[in-house]
Image (tube, rainbow, N blue to C red):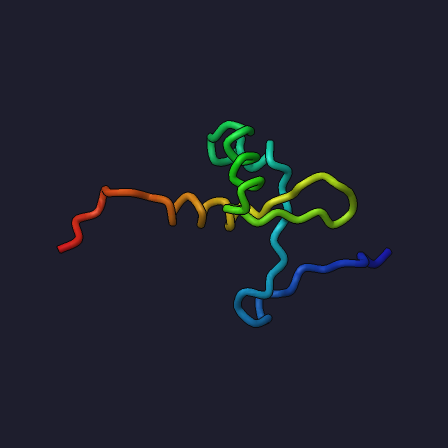
Length: 79
C-alpha cells in the first residue's frame, strides 16, 4: 500500500522538507519548558500555530526554538 504523503527526498530544494507538527505539550516536553509557557506564546502570536484537522493547536519545533533564540538577552560579547 502506497503512502498518501511522502516527505521530500534529499534532492529536493532546501527548506521544502516536511516537518512534523507537535502538540503544545510535546513541544514543551522536548525543550524542557512548561506547557503554559508555550500556550501563552501561541496565544500572543509569538509562535505560529497550525490547526489542520480540528481545533487542537500544533506547532513546529523549529519555530519554537527560533522564538526562544530570538528572545535571548545578553550572553554575547558584542563590541
